[in-house]
Image (cartoon, rainbow, N blue to C red; front, top):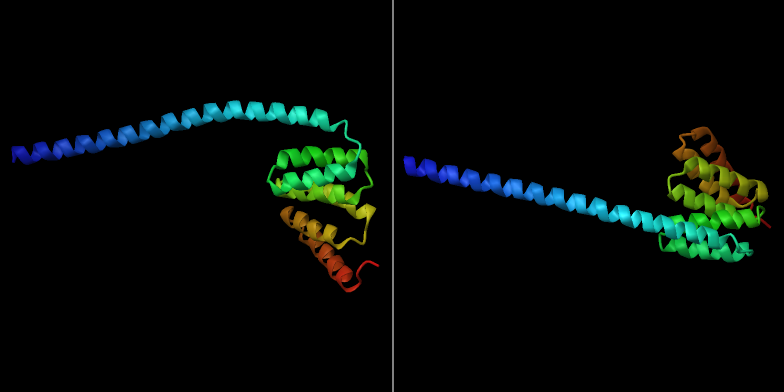
Length: 164
């Protein structure tokens, strides 16, 4: 019996050593990841600040919105936001700039910001159906079912009566 107890104890010790080794390696990996991504975040923020400064000198809102669409397609939300905010600053009456800004804010879970941008787009062009479709999403995310319902009615109305 002594020999079987010794084997059992050895197996238990090996299992414990393996578990401790696994946990330690995961902890070291996590700490290294945190350290590396912290540095990466700082670099990313630096580049975003430089880009925001560069974009301030742009004067063509159409060009900026086109560039933002490319950022959106490549899932680069931060640069799309910077670009669209500048586009709407340059031309506050550019409906598409506000719609894209609302869209990217929805995608970024900034629902109140999206609502504000989309309401601006609605004021500029109250007959553009896609604005109301995005407003439905924003109101639903903000749990305002009544307003979402009103926007659905407008989408239905505009669907029956397309813009001339």
